[in-house]
Amino acid sequence: MQKDQQKLAQLIQGKKVAFIGAGVSHKTLIKEFVELGAHVTLCDQKKSVEDFGDYAATIRELGIDLSLGENYLDGFKGQDIIMRTPGFVGYFEKPLQDAMAAGTMVTSEVELFFDFCPCEIVAVTGSDGKTTTTTLISKFYEAAGRKVHLGGNIGAALLPMLPEVSPEDVAVVELSSFQLISMHQSPKIAVVTNVTPNHLDHHKDMQEYIDAKRNILLYQNPPCRAVLGYENEISRSMQKDCKGKQVWFTRLHETDNGAFLSSAMQAARVKIDEEGVEAAAYTEIVCADSAMMEVPPTVEMDLDRPFLFVIFDNSNVPLFVGTVNTMA
Picture 1 (cartoon, one colour):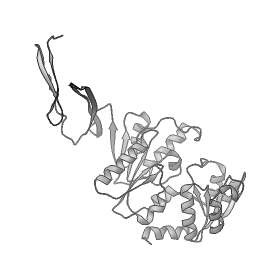
Picture 2 (cartoon, helix red, strand yellow):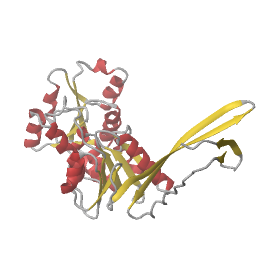
Picture 3 (cartoon, helix red, strand yellow):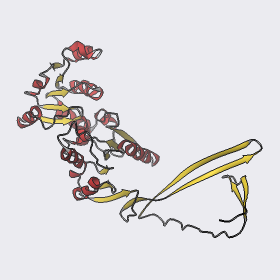
Picture 4 (cartoon, helix red, strand yellow):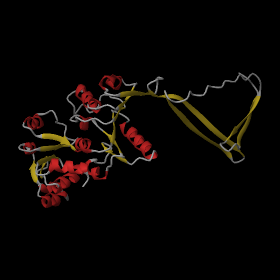
């Protein structure tokens, strides 16, 4: 057992632990916690153990206590640890707040991973674009030869990965507002794509939603880095929350502190022969930052007389030959 796994075992062993719900990640953790010596209670709105379907046999086999039905939150009483799930949105409501006031540790799978993870963590949040951004970052690290542990809101539970994580690896994590709302740990590198009204049917108001997102930054310890979306007013305002180096990314503004979209080019290729016409097009995006070379200058030509032109493919094979005889 690795050192970090041993620390987790020391936290869990002999403790009374309540799990809210039996989702995919919790099913894995419940088994692991029982094996580490925890006394587990499963709190769920289902009315009977049979309602868990195939998982009912595992519940009986592991000796899990149940707190079910309308008053399932009564199972919080007397617990040492409550494992919250992102789907449980009542973090600031009375049952959890009473448990915390009584000294119960309220945490989650992601929070425990942050507590015990031995490697660098890069985390991404935002109202839009976080899954794409998280995936791209993981691919960049993989291309650089790093072993990547990808998880969080993107699908995979991270805590069960802990035995496989070494200090040389990198964890790339997508975080939702539901995960961030109770977090008191921030990643080494934090990315906020944007913050727009979202999930307001689950959050008390927009400010609660914003404050949850801010947690990705508030607990960073230098040296650290924050990457913020410049176009969005709310993510831009989070600059004040940054504890270390902060950079922007932007599509519409040049910046000397981050990366920006410097140019976009649309190109077309046309082939005309005795078999007919074929055409293709592509878009090239150039993203620059303050450390990159200058974008090559645009070449302009004044054409004031008829001319011949040829379109070549990438192998310099002529695809189309044409003439322009009349100048506008």
